[in-house]
Amino acid sequence: MYVYEYERISSNLTGWGFSGDKYETEEYKEIINKRAAEGWRYVGFIPALQRGTGHIQAMDLVFEREQ
Image 1 (cartoon, rainbow, N blue to C red):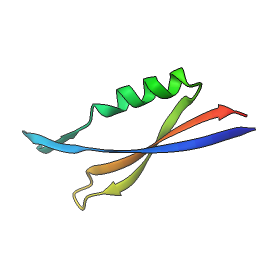
Image 2: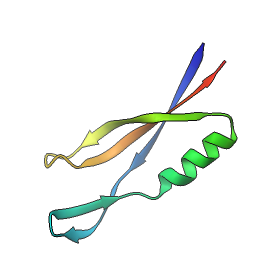
Image 3: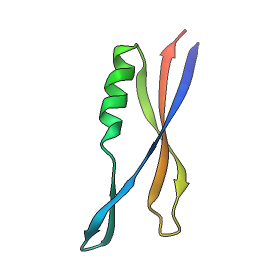
Image 4: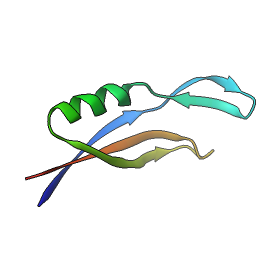
């Protein structure tokens, strides 16, 4: 049986590009590496908060491990 945990991260407006606003996050790298060291496997993300423009403002990272 697998158990799942979710960790929410946010995207921040970092500027503007040719196609409009730019959103990015760097914290996901640290979170995924920390969880992997604890025995969790990253399996994907779920958009948790989305702007009217379609930009994902917050997402839940999904982790699993066998119990």
